[in-house]
Amino acid sequence: MSVLMNEPVSPSSDDVRLARQSSRSLAPFLNRKLTVRIADTDEQVELPAVAVRLLVDLLSAMAEGNAVTLIPIHAELTTQQAADLIGVSRPFLIKQLDEGLIPYRRVGTHRRVLFSDLMRYKHEIDEKRTDALDELTRQAQDLEMGY
Image (cartoon, rainbow, N blue to C red; front, side, top):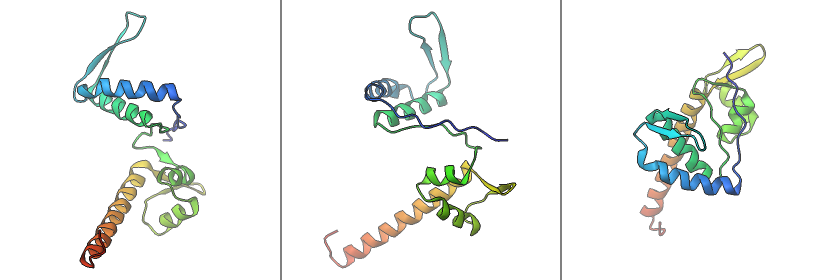
């Protein structure tokens, strides 16, 4: 099953301002379901607590001026989408796939990567990077380099 990813949405300066205010207003309600009244109508919508948390995360990212998109956890990504998400080149990503570092499946001649597998790989790489930086810091301290 293919899941369509939304294109990233870049907030305008007005969106950034409103997102900042909205995320601050909603933050105290992170672990509660909310009933939201739709402006200029009598309509109300009940939001589950997990949706409130996601909404605050989304608004916080927008408040920082970041472009945002939603990707279902079981989404299958093209190699270009996967490379873009983790900030590497497509050839580098394909090398990681071919070396078995990231699971994938073939659809005809094309490779597809599960978002969840890509995030697991990214987390592992981030941990290794942090460990390497910690080791460099420890060595610099041992050598009294002022760190």
